[in-house]
Amino acid sequence: MHDSATAVIDDKRHLIVSIILGIDPGSRLTGYGVIEQHGRHFTYLGSGCIKAIAAGNELGARLQTIFAGVSELILQFQPDRFAIEQVFMAKNPDSALKLGQARGAAIVAATNNGLSIAEYSARQIKQAVAGTGAADKTQVQHMVKTILKLPATPQADAADALAVALCHAHSQDSINKLSGQASKTVRRRLRI
Image (cartoon, rainbow, N blue to C red; front, side, top):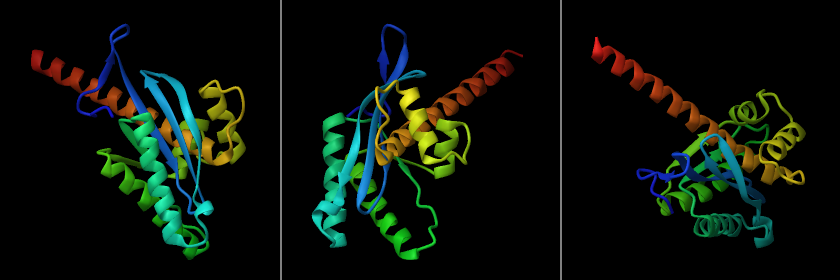
């Protein structure tokens, strides 16, 4: 796992290289997507679903499956950044609680492996990937396929998780730009 404090630099282009694990939580299916970021370029590393429903109907067993699955993904891909979709307020409070518990299992797996957590709303994710916070699932799937140059459209939960990872990459890129602009302003003021 890369330490966030010591970023990996691509010597050829002097770009920060990082691996981002995105999670689309669910109590039955938890989507995951892993990308590598080279500056503004992205490489698809993997995606799929952790099938918690295979553990049965007992919630504790499903949460343990999510925790173990995310832990295994972290060991396999060695990400240095972790992003997850926030809970939205569903019409069914029971569903929202189960979704929150699934998120918790994934977050604990990430923190146990030394990763900090970035959280994004569904609207932020759609805006970052499709250009509008009101995009539907098919638009998000299409844009993920296009951005990552995938040969086929990913399954919905996997596409959502890849969109979470892309959103985090774009958010970090924006933060880096702003901090670069701020440091230029400070340097200009110091010269005066």
